[in-house]
Length: 137
Image 1 (cartoon, rainbow, N blue to C red):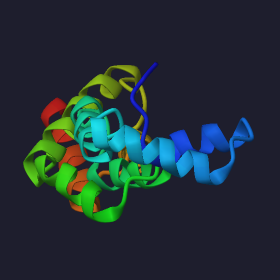
Image 2 (cartoon, rainbow, N blue to C red):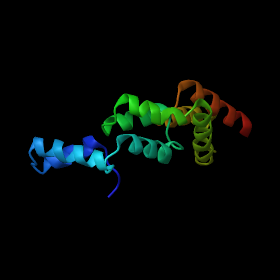
Image 3 (tube, helix red, strand yellow):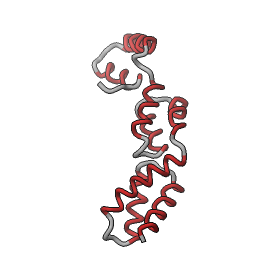
Image 4 (cartoon, rainbow, N blue to C red):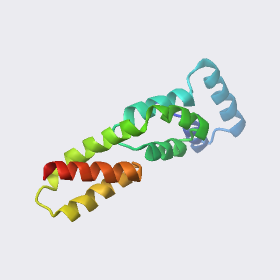
């Protein structure tokens, strides 16, 4: 089983109709012995997914999984502006091959959308797409 946050485990136990006081007791004990660690989960999650996502998307995913904002912010420190630009550049380069026969405006629109959906900052999206398209001209 993949690592889970405290919130995810609590939801699973609640779905199995485990009484709330038992859930709290069990999860507290799991935290004491290190079986549940939201900080370690967040760091691992960010490390595994940072190459294909921007900081904003990673933060949203962590929030959905029940990681508090402070813990998420600590884990996201490794995702700086330069690493986001490099990850965006890799995605754009892969997508450029499949859009080779299209007009520049269409390619820009598709690439902008791809990177925006992946949570990359607007300045990174604009710069990377234009640099990569200019480099192909």
